[in-house]
Image (cartoon, rainbow, N blue to C red; front, side):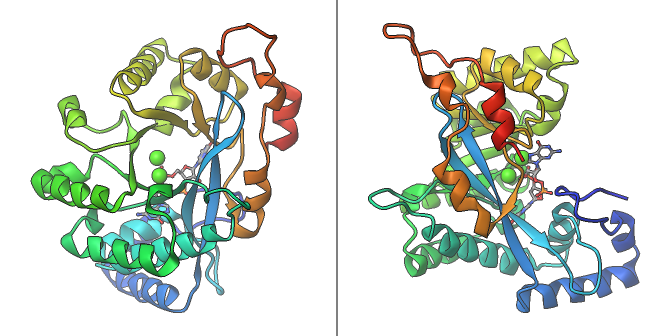
Length: 304
Ligand code: C2E
Ligand code: CA
Ligand code: CA
């Protein structure tokens, strides 16, 4: 059994859908869930450590079936990919996220950087049309939309993938490389990908305190990202010890349960108006502009 990320229930086992008959039934349920609006999006804010301001919000698909326990994204996204439903699901996620995030605009300000996951299976010429159409219909500014891809896109047809990414960039969207540090492709691809941000994978963050070799890798990834001119964000930050070590390593954007868990759309706006670690940015005049220590009391008061 897998535990659901927001601890709201138990999920279907992955093996359930490895049985071909159950897989067909599951696909039918998923198709109907997409068509009948049974899916929804949760959002997880990301923060800059320098001033505690939110620096983005990631849309994460959720499925709470009316007649059963919640089903984990890892399970239904994989099934959607295998059953050829990911394009429809991805289209719904993109449109829903852009429409919703438009409402979070503060007067005189641009909407937040909205991060949307894009499956390697969505990398096809048709996605460009969907992207252009969603941007037009929702009027979400392209420069505030960040599409999260993984190195998986480079496996099957790297040239097609690079061509697609170049087209997305022409629309003005941002691109993030998700799960960074876990792929197997050569690092030289980084010089060819039109990426704005690297997201250091949670599995590395989990081991950064306990394993000195992982810590060395994470330090090197942060430095590599910075040298290449990318923003670098650590994902899955769960403890203060991880937070403080990553901060000392020069990572200045973080996302994780320590800061904020994924929340329903109706709760996001209050997080976007809030800073955390506010007092950590108050520096004596003339002191260097380095990130201050995290104000633990403040951090605890806003972590959910
Ligand atoms: P991801 O893109 O790496 O998303 C981050 C995952 O880590 C999310 O899991 C999030 O809830 C979880 N997370 C965030 N902070 C922490 C933390 O501090 N500790 C722990 N243990 N987990 C944390 P979630 O929502 O279950 O999603 C799992 C994966 O499913 C995502 O991983 C992404 O690959 C995929 N996914 C979710 N929504 C979508 C979507 O709309 N489209 C596509 N293509 N994939 C999606
Ligand atoms: Ca992601
Ligand atoms: Ca990730």
